[in-house]
Length: 381
Image (tube, rainbow, N blue to C red; front, side, top):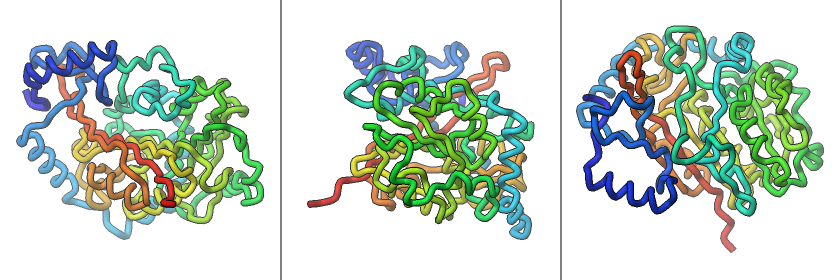
């Protein structure tokens, strides 16, 4: 069966011994459900650590080459700049906060979101042996319906100059940043591209009474409004604001070198590849020395890339969805260069290959995501 290659019995035995020694928690990230017998493939909805054959890789490459052979004419690409805010507002007006599920796996893969001295497992659903990063729900509908493939919209690269005037009201001056919300917190987190709050509210539920403060921003005013209207929104531990990270002069409600963690999940893929480096550079300036940049996004030849049609490609591995939103598909080397060229040190840089299963239709689908962690080094004495 295509889409996976079962691990050797020796490898499986070694993995199981290590798993037992850690009380059921896998020794490596990205899940612990390993497919060892192809006959079992339809017993679960997802299998972790799937390896591709050379044939799989070549077929994926050919499919991506085919769907990118016809590109959107240059003269038509400008509208994705000027109308970007409309695309995102329409998305959140249409779907509100009901399109995506909460990311309960966050604390499994990114324990940096909880202070070490008071670390705990987090929500019961986040047991490392049972919950791991999974695809954003309804991804299969992205090209058959006019819906967006992932929530972060604060960072759409093609919106410079199109941000609504209401965003200006939430941009504090440099002087105001000195008295920013959360200034007395012992650990400060920024989530970029918060959407309707599918990372925000799991985090809020785990940081109360811990001296942690969460900032979250999105390009869409409607998305930020949905976050603020949520019953779990708590201004004592969270500050949501409208912000376009591609705007080079827009200010944040906190000073440089003040953040411990920056969380960017399915966000940078929505930004034009030529602008991503500038975004990471600017965001990195707000990290403290020793602070961590947490990243998860689409990987090269993910199913969602191979499903795209001719005429949706803007440039190499960069596409427009039918709802007008953008998506780029990264490689490990690209991710490494992106963050290290911004002065950060690599802690983790993983390619997450999984086998997603539709048990009802007896269909298997190859998924690829990137998951990485980078640290801002301390200056040399």
